[in-house]
Amino acid sequence: MAVSGFEGFEKRLELHFFGDDPVVDNMGLRLLDFESLVKVLNAVQCTVVSAVGNHYFDAYVLSESSLFVYPTKIIIKTCGTTQLLKSIGPLLHYACNLGLTLCSCRYTRGSFIFPKSQPFPHTSFKEEVIYLEENLPSNLCYRKASVMPSKMTSHSWHVFTASDQTHIVSQNDDLYTIEVCMTELDRVMAHKFFQPPGDGKNGDIAGKEMTKLTGIGDINPGAIICDFAFDPCGYSMNGIDNDRYSTIHVTPEDGYSYASFECVGSIFDDNDDIAEVLKKVVQVFRPATMSVSTTCASHEVWTRVANAVEPLGMKCRSCAVDEFPDSGSVVFQTFTVRRK
Image (cartoon, rainbow, N blue to C red; front, side, top):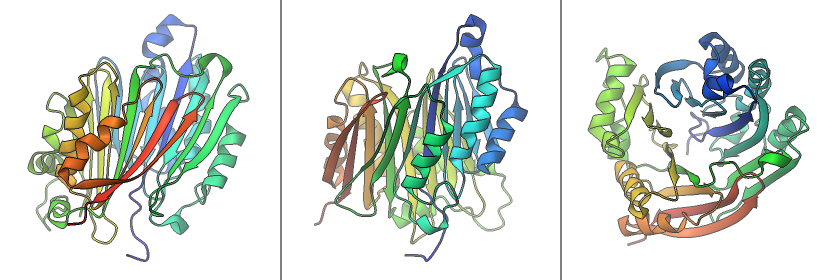
């Protein structure tokens, strides 16, 4: 293990808002100009490298992961030594100017590979919770923080949620979010996320080649993909499929290789849909260790996870379940390659 390297494990912040103005409700946060978004990202210490949008939302690939902007929801996911929680202040300010009020917040992350390299307020989960408590408005009075353990000390799941009284469990309670964290990637597969020295290709062109070469483009063939390759290595993509997003980020360096996959689905989807997606993700990266966090308000989607990946040689090592006021159930499962 390297003494220190690039931190692949992301921090993820999801904020939901509401407003009375129907014009704002139709576009809402999407009315924020690019300059305002840049100021938010400056506080986090990252930049936009590529973007795509459709009728429903806008998706930005960042220098450190992703940003998704819906009319009344924003999701920021950042890796490295970014200061994600510092986005809360400016986001609340800009939302207020649009007549929007925060009604729920969810913050999640795995266990950092290099925790001592993290800056304030990410030096510990306790510090993060204190910062959240102090910077969220008082109307978000239903709050809970939890560290969900596993049998592997390298994988635990940190969750903080806060909600106001009228928005406990969001309106879209048929939706679920799956967050996958993979470590110890197959070296042959990880090598595909390195750019050949001196090939002169920009990040957009190299990213498209990586998407095709690795099979990432086949995970959801119906999605519009916005991808980017970093020099000399690393890769990010956002997929947009109607009102749903997916995202992948790869840190391929040997010794601390890491990849993440996240998507949203509905309990009304075909049961095989998420299983097929997870199978494809595991086959692209072939990790030795992975964790899967499933957040769902009303349905046990998590049972499909093990059924999808265990036939590929992964064995479920632990499963933890917790309930959160504004999110429903969070199920955290860990897997390792089955011993021969």
